[in-house]
Image (cartoon, rainbow, N blue to C red):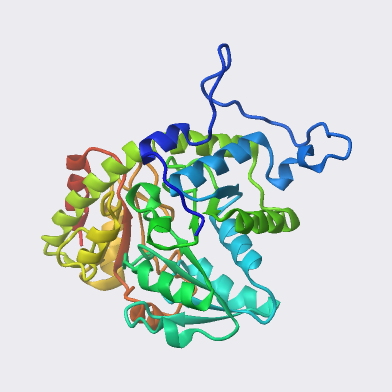
Length: 386
């Protein structure tokens, strides 16, 4: 499956790129800000070109992400959707079929529904709560794709039965682990073959870069890199360096994200203006026991909830916030709040959103690393305006 034993996440977040400076060399690897490199007179392995993803800054971060995930190889790309798209293109060809969770990031679902069919690749979506994965597979199925925790409903999909099915049918199991991060969960340990991240989020951690990451077997990552060379979504060396800097503090940041999110979830769960709270750390969460088993590093920094009164009430709540920013991203040191009906799931009908558990009034909160009391104070004040 392309996995191997390695050090803990805090150590790998700092030393996982293999950089061991000699005396007089910098402790922090420098940015190699060059588009091209001197060739070796026909020895192709020495020909470096940054669009190919083999700039030293790019490859060092790819190695670090592979170490964090316990995988054979890794690569970084220009965005999370770039990583998702290149991986799916690398693993499929005309006539192939994908089985995917119906609970996915909106842009991922649109790529599967609208873009891949233009290339002759079809997808069957499975509600993970019903678990009809086996019935959805065909002779032409090549991979199973899912998220854990899901965006934005924070469902926990157990990869172990999917891994067993994939192994039986000779399929690849691909997981978007953006919300989990390799600190909370190492999907490869549960049978996942390929792990994807929107590195824009927790890996970068400071809302100042756009990047994607993929880790898995060496041959698969080689195919992803080949697709990246064709389509061009390589990452800039300076952005790769910023991503590496963000990863260095990933483990300590996640500790604070998790602690704050747990406190916020408890507060919201007890508030009269809130209809329901989705947080895997709450005993009321339908997947709480499974989350405790899989998310060994904590329950995450994302909290979703439904404000009583629907969309208008949620609008009033968000306008009243003073500390927490209204913004569509997540995983940064600052707390960010959004309504999926206006962002990730804006292209989906209200009825379909309702089916997915995202009614009007649904709010997704990325809990940052501010002081807990200040976050709860801001939420309490804003909820008083609902």
